[in-house]
Each structure stands twice: as structure tokens, then as C-alpha cells.
Image 1 (tube, helix red, strand yellow):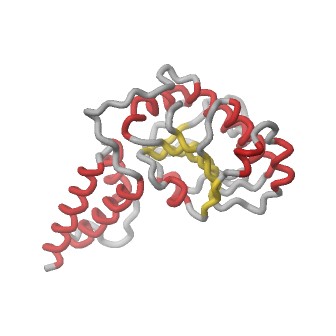
Image 2 (cartoon, helix red, strand yellow):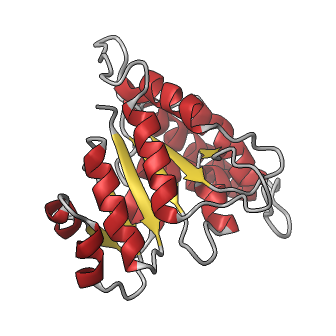
Image 3 (tube, one colour):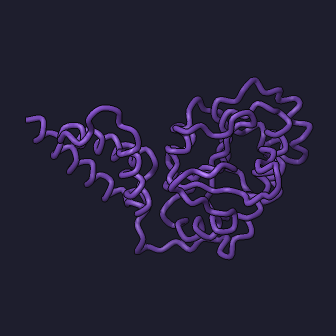
Length: 235
């Protein structure tokens, strides 16, 4: 089974959470997290989680997206909207990419809440985006339906049992990549590159590093180098 963590951000409909538990069990997934769940009636959720009540009872709830994706090497956001400059992967292509990246570490697949989906800052926080190619006047799917489509696609990937290679070191987890971004921001500020509002510069530059799937050693080397540069600039 591909190492994927399903992350549901601000879910507010208990039926969707229960149905999500059921489809995750249907397709053999067990790693999932709720971010800031909105007053869910778990009794209602249990009625929809038939056969997956234990999975529902064991789901972790965390306050922020950073907490949910900690330890993951790749963070992918799902959204029906198109984001300029960021081509979304379709579910089958995402599954193939996850299978290829699996030896480097787990992937976090992030879903937005029923009311507003993923917010702009959350989409920017993701390394890549994915979109279900729906048609017609209603492009967005019900949350549980979207989870089901991805759960099936990931279970049906050509290489659903990733082969680990001793020659390929583990990728840096998300929290270490956040450290690289913070160090880059400090170095750019110290060097005068950042003047006024930051806008997208740091995020765009960091995204190029994330796409390269830095190893833990490489991430730490980047942090050390950027801190050295920032320190010299300040001096």
C-alpha cells in the first residue's frame, strides 16, 4: 500500500467524515487526520462508517495543517479550482507520482472543508495540486466522494507496493522543509531582496526546492548555508 496520509481540513458534515472512514477502509487506507473539525456529531458519523467504526474512533484531530502533515515528504492539495501557474495532477497521475516518490517518505493528500475548500494560504503551502476532472456546471464534488475517488486511484496505482531502494535516502520531512523556507526568507530579507510585502517570492523559490525532494542531509545543508549568508549580511 502506498504511504499516503489523508488530511481533511475543517470538515463540518459528520456524514462526510463517517463516509470517508468507510471508503478509506474499503480501499485499505488507515492513515488520516482531521484538521480543526467543526463540531462534528460523531454518533451521526458512526452510522455512515459501517465496518470502519474503529478507523473513525482512531482518527487524529489537530489544530493546524502543519501538525497534520508533519513527517510527510510531499504535500498535495486537492481543489476543483485552477491556480494560475500550477498545473494540477489528475488522480491517476497523482497515484503514479506517489508510487514513484514513495521510497522517499509519505505523501499528505489534503482536502478542504465543505464550505470553502482549501484557502489560498493552504494551497500555497502545498508542494503540488490535484484536481478531479469533473464536467458540467458543478465542478466540485462532495468531500466523501472526493476521498473515495483518490482512495481508489491510489489503491489501483500500477505499483501499489512501493519498492524501497537502499541507494535512495529518505526525503526531508515537511517540518524540515519549512525550516529551509524560514531560513531562505531570513537570507533574502538580510540581503535586501525582500522589500515591502513578500507576496509570492519566497513560496515560489521554496517550491522549486520542494520539487527536487531534498534529502534530510540536503535540507540541513541548505539551512546551514542560508543562515551563514543571512548572518554575514547582517554583520
